[in-house]
Image (cartoon, rainbow, N blue to C red; front, side, top):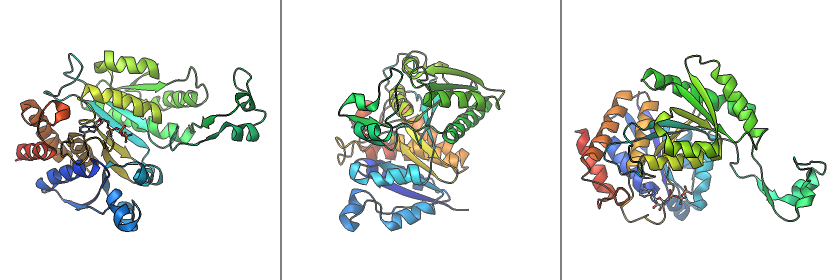
Length: 356
Ligand code: ATP
């Protein structure tokens, strides 16, 4: 049956890299219907809103969503995809492709997955004046016996970690590790928290992961604090199989880890929920290079590889990944972030040619 894809380019380089991915997908003659409703800045100009009803309705009926990036004025699109559609498991694979420039000396064989909780933690920002907390929680005292009133003027941010959120993300990570083990990976889940400081919220995350993994006897488990993990990603990237962590830690660690595979122009991601899924590059709208035609489309094209896998088109996904691989192995057509002089359209064309 034809799968319905909704492409939401958004802002900045978003539409440029999403268009590139669409061109590649269309060249593959797949059983996909790709719809491109207006959204982002272009929709604000025409309809006065970044996410018009037509785009939202199509999104609600989609089998998968291909998303670019948004700037602040269109952030409602991202909020909708993440929190209304409840796409709670953010999968960020870190995989080195031969020929890609990376700061690591011996990158061959780097291949791991970051599973980032995408629905809670510090997102969406829940902040306010400390005076509000002082008023609502007059009896609350921290570990040092300090009350909110003792701080004087300032701001707070709240971090939410729920049992349900921990359970489902731990399960998603274990399922991925199980799947990867069948493909020859080591079958290890690394839980990352800061439970030595955030004993309650990170404590719950860690404890839940430890409980959930008991249902997967074929997997190994370890736990590291987030500061230690940042160091390990740089020093021992090949020891990692699947990392599971909370929202903001996952966001930060995946930008760091993305450098191992060549940086933001390369790093793909998928956000999967029980009913909806959207696929986007790890990078943002990159306003500094928007409109110049030099954005690297690879991260979005690799996100499309993840989308094809999600849609059950595994062979086609592999074909597309191999085409990307071949372009980098050859190393002739590269955007400036990869040390080349080629444009977005040249890289797109080179990938399409490898598919033939
Ligand atoms: P956000 O807050 O939405 O993550 P940001 O401004 O922090 O966005 P990006 O938009 O991802 O970060 O850009 C960070 C840097 O990486 C910029 O210098 C940008 O030009 C570069 N960059 C991001 N994506 C690409 C890409 N696809 N190709 C080339 N350079 C990129």
